[in-house]
Length: 601
Image 1 (tube, helix red, strand yellow):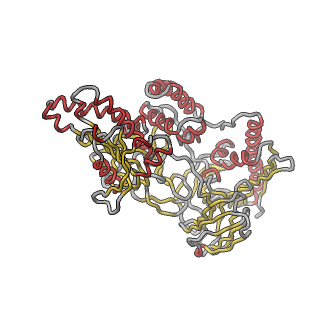
Image 2 (cartoon, rainbow, N blue to C red):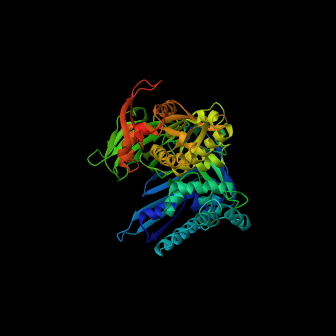
Image 3 (cartoon, rainbow, N blue to C red):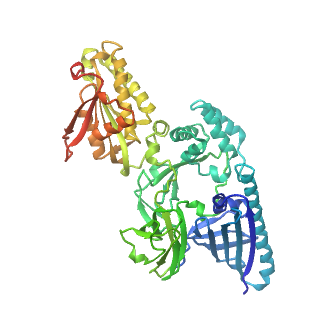
């Protein structure tokens, strides 16, 4: 049977990186040229394919094996699909990019397919040519927009329900800056479906040149306003795509797996769980697709990807950019790689040779990888320093807006998930117990509540979240230890005015402890809480403080001084603290606004 091949060449005015960004976003381009939505089923056999896809193609209902794309960053990418039904045995789409002598970009398109019957060849040749013509049209339109200084926008999007969107915007304007509320509403109205089906607040903030936490807080407020809904995505540590999508934290488990990468991994709140948003159905019924589940744009940290034949060899091409990378083979085998000048231009190794040492390869060199497996697998070279700017669960759950608006969104009972670092703030109101006898329950209770209001305001202004109150003590969490110490310092200043208010308050004071480190997030008494040695140390440091003092780790105090958060004159003592339950002494700093003799115990 003769292979049908259709080819086109497009000369673009735009630079290579811009054209690559457009073409490699295959979900968006497939929408633009009118391809149909995909229905996916996980798949495992001896082939490289990890999913079976059912869709409409050229007027036929077809099923095919979805194999990983193959590419070299900024040079080429292709996808081969083996058909299980329909009139075609296989189809391959390939894109080749290069720079012309005039420093413009040439794109070569090639669509190849094998009909199951020769009588279909003329018809399929026409359909292949039509498909490439639509793709050429999209490339030309994108290139023209860039040349005109216009930010290209996709032309495929669902319409918003304007009345519901306006109501949600008005509600949102009551809780956040109205200009930001309008900007989010405009984005929900005007962005294409691929953008709004997975709103990543930190990406929006970077695009809009706004503070990341402000946009995240606005998105959380937009959930309460009925504009957006919050989802939790469990992210694969290799492909960095969502292995699953969950409506609440209670649906999380201790472990997860990625069908594409064929690996299992532990779930933590730092890297594994990301908060994303999408419009509510009342505001806009988004076509989330998918229209493609591969393509380089889905894994922008991957600079090269190939299919390894069963017990065969393929070459992974290193990028021109020096730096640290990781070579990964489906199933979990991984090898650290450094791209640097002067290193060998070619390396040969088996997947069983991967080890702890770092291999060096020259820029644009070839790593020939031999698979020892009896099935096809894909191999990829990943940037290790790439950051997607995810709003992780660690960051989100330390937001005051999350604690207020999503208090019921907690981990399931008995589940403890690791957090690599959180800043914990403990306070205790000194002298309050005696007030219940001296001033009566009502007056003492009111004083305690008034002091909680002071603390809560300071904690939230310093980007922290109240975890719980324990009697007249407070525990708060911060994604950055430095914010926790800034809140503690602000508390000491605020208590000067609090204590000066009347004679009753003057009989009290505050003492505080701040400490940061790894711990576990759990649900306790219906709230998201933290436990582990970091929590123990933070509480013990608060116990080491006297009235009107903060005790924190000395290194945190030094960091605060260097950052301009702490006046070094406020450190009244440095020492080695020996804490109950802690094996080794901790270097600490004691901070106070006044001399010890003037501070009540």
